[in-house]
Image 1 (cartoon, rainbow, N blue to C red):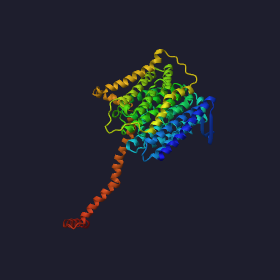
Image 2 (cartoon, rainbow, N blue to C red):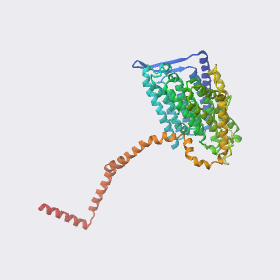
Image 3 (cartoon, rainbow, N blue to C red):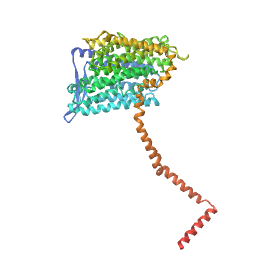
Image 4 (cartoon, helix red, strand yellow):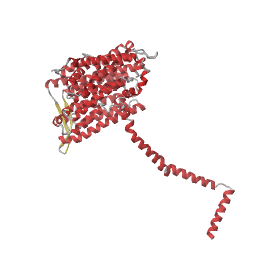
Length: 575
């Protein structure tokens, strides 16, 4: 059982590294120390091309969380991927993924950050197409091409940052005025939007669910999708007061609302959780656009704990119900899988912002600060609606999968037997309960001063309760109203398909090029080039050889015709 030994080794190594990083983060925070290491590679037009590493409390804390979640995911994969013929390849890819994220976290330089940024894009493509079929290939292509837009934006921002005299955005970002290098700020924001799947680049995030579930747990909690948020947290001093900040606010609020709305019409278990990730990324980027980068980082870490737990629970459920992912094929799992159901409910309640769980400390503070900020009515309404929709789809998921009617076949054997998977889930459950309180004490030793009226103070709680009631009761009554829903089919398709984002990102972008290529192929390859090329030459030769073959047959009529032809020719010559 070599894979068990491998996973125990990875668990011990990554866990010890994670706790070491968290201790170093606390030390760095206490002494307010920052360590930077630079290797000068070359000098180009008086600007030094350097490989830079930064070690402060932010990078240590985030790296510790990434390593801790990665250790749990790799240990969990030992049972989840058992028997897979490409298990070894899977392990190396996941470790390369974690290494790329680590390189991105400790890079404060636009050039050195490319090592982790491009590494994440490349390895994510290899992981999405891990199960080699047509659906995975399409999802991987959509993922990698969407992320390449952000890679190009980073490359362009590197050239524009020449104007600042160097590429170290930690040092130079605070000196960039609102009018200076606005294009570079917009490019960095666009790069972050592609990695964090904001509108109009949202289609790749649910499509990336074609990857194995342990990869989804890692991608959607602390690695790929959080890279854009982390880049903007580091870049936040340059965004203060710029037009890019206002654009980011409205786009992130729209993404938050769109993802919450789409999750209420989705039936794929993993896609529901993916859309919840998209909604929370909108929360992080919206509060960052309001100027509170520390709150965005707080929610980034708290969200990583319970989202990885939620995906792990989804993986156990999918394994137990014979690889079904449709939540309508589940039901009453709370009786046969009590431990998994407990962890799943815990993660769902943390996602909803249940008091004293991990999500409450960050999400409630974000909502209060947003309501207290100088935002317009549209952003306020989107915040309120997204909060209610989050609780709505969470309780809808609980109804369909855990407490609803039993819809499994009689041959399904549903239980909590796997010790490896449940032990890693229990470890993350502890983080899901205590992580928010720990982070709030560490990051905010002096709490925010919140000045709100009683109505606004209880608004988040009231929206959560209302969303829970709608999400649970409406789905209980949905059987009686299933026929009526056909009348509003077009509206349901619009709201449930992320506002047609997958269609706009795939077919409409390639329609013109495919149509032009089809016309060129029809006129060129199948047209004139065929007529004068291989097929035309072949048909002409066959046609002429047919005449030659007929002429060589021993036929009296042919002999008489040829004799008559030569007589006429000689006659005309004699004349």
